[in-house]
Image (spheres, rainbow, N blue to C red):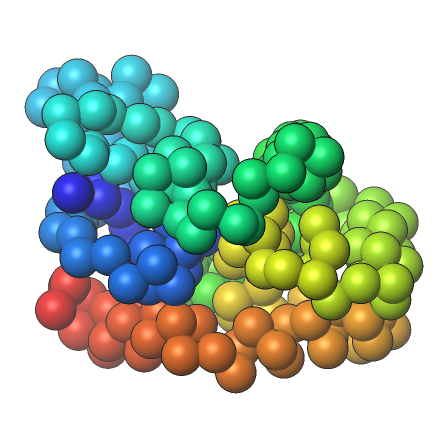
Length: 214
Ligand SMILES: N[C@@H](CCC(=O)N[C@@H](CS)C(=O)NCC(=O)O)C(=O)O
């Protein structure tokens, strides 16, 4: 299994988190986004959108990070997690919401304040400000939900938790204003305490200090 990735970005982080959680062995192929490698013909053959992440698994090529999560869950996940149809619908609801609403508002924080400086570029604060007014509304929805249950779809960890939490990997460094959402902070603290989250965090630290995959 190969993951074409640029590890610092939120859509890539969600896949790495799940791969570590499932303890799957895979090869990472670094696509140097700052050098425009995603536009090269060889990569474009794999993803015509010229974006990462892309998963190659037994000849199957999958782009779109949430579709990759679904594939990994279906093929390698525990049978019990997400097997109930109502849970699948709830999971799909959060995955769609993550891509359609959450990403637009939350992803720019880490992208501008962590990834851009890593690339030697100044943070474009107006890219954050453009959607920042919507953050309280979205965070409140998640927080209210998590006050009632441990994870997004119930008491079991679900791929939608990976999908939303990935963009919070650098939340303190990126100064994402989450202080008023205690249930989100509690959920996040629980995820951060797990082995697979810490494994991903260490891999990101390594990438930040070396600029390459180890
Ligand atoms: N909806 C896609 C978004 C993929 C995406 O935008 N990836 C970014 C990194 S997070 C990328 O590759 N950007 C390169 C570019 O736009 O040139 C997914 O979830 O996989």
